Length: 439
Length: 153
Image 1 (cartoon, rainbow over the protein chains, first blue to last red):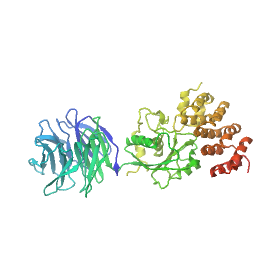
Image 2 (cartoon, rainbow over the protein chains, first blue to last red):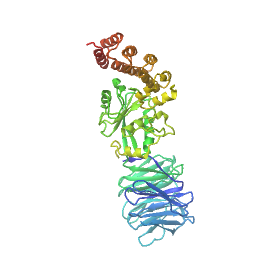
Image 3 (cartoon, rainbow over the protein chains, first blue to last red):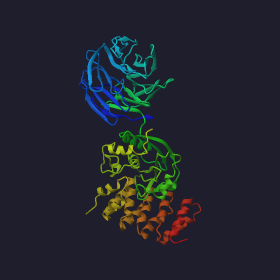
């Protein structure tokens, strides 16, 4: 399991985001557009759909929750500062209905059972306020105290359990929870938060919370059943509170608004990954780390992660100018066989890049490799894109006649409009390679 | 029709040039190859030198001889590799200094490029390398193999 890169989901977002999931491999996200309406986009297991407008006039980020299959409940603050509710009942969007209240901040929502909803907001007294749907009716607002400067985030890990998080006046994250008998807390979870919070849970007794630090990147803290861990930085440049949701074990999806006002998505889970090992006979002119970074940038557009698993120096002067013959896939020279024999414990589905002084004849790199020893050679004078290009061949890609694409056959030094593109069909080929296992 | 520098660069700027196709540019490409071989871009220089070897022309031979004395060992490696595509007498002139090059990579490629019908001068240079007590194992093996190709047991 690992964190993916950031993926843009587009949109022109005026406020933050809400997210929900009503099934494995299903995501629904909500934001407020420049027209103040609530907008909806969803991952149907195959691709992102939307955006679609759900109307309304919203003055806060939406909160969203699902209590079961094909059910979504959304909450926003309206221009009258009351909480407004809209829901998907499996057939159509219903509402809006007003749930009253006088809100200073946005809304948080959780559900711990079918036909159960718990919503939270910040009142004019800056206390946390709670209202809930018990399956029959909405119960009155109750105060849970505190002095809060952000919208609440709420999540449930199981029946009769709710965890709520807000930012306090000290800019730390504060936590209160319902344990089935009473409200517990407050407890401080520290941090220096400049925006609100997102919360998710992928298992009983597991909590993951997210916020934005003073450096504008997303930060993560988690309860592992024993103790709070983190904070860990997750990068990004965020202008909204994160939203977080889990569709199942070991999976978290987070969403924030970036400086371009688009929605950005980052997830924890199984990620197709190229495990790359660098074996260095001669250090290239463009630093290996730079080449790997460029490769990461391009491969991330396919949702493929690049892990530089190891770097090893090899003292093999007889192979430093390696004979690669015609450099044809499936055909290797004795010198290539000898060089690629130096895997030194690398896994069968891991890829090795051998950085050599030159090839004979002179190429920037060559992806031909012996069967069962996937990898490529990269010459000292290679470009910043050569590594990603050659390993693209190793993953099954062919040359194209387009200098805006990584696999251009016209020379990666001639790439225009960097970073170069990988087309969806190329991503499919790479994703299908045994050399991009999900880890 | 005259070959332009753009056409030559278009072939050689590829990550993996198709040298057989590029050789179709013919002798008109040689002035451009000379310019690239003497330029600051070592990657392009090595490709230009190698391509020159595929163009059977006296001017190409001179370019390889010049490359054989280049400061950058990668260019000398390219000259040694290019010699495989040159007629034996021309190849021998390029390879004679390179089989005894200080750089082990240049030496390796040069020794592997020694043609069966190389000149007597090349044979003597290879024999001298084979006799050197301080030669590394790879050089000794490759020089002995080269001598066998030259007809000397």
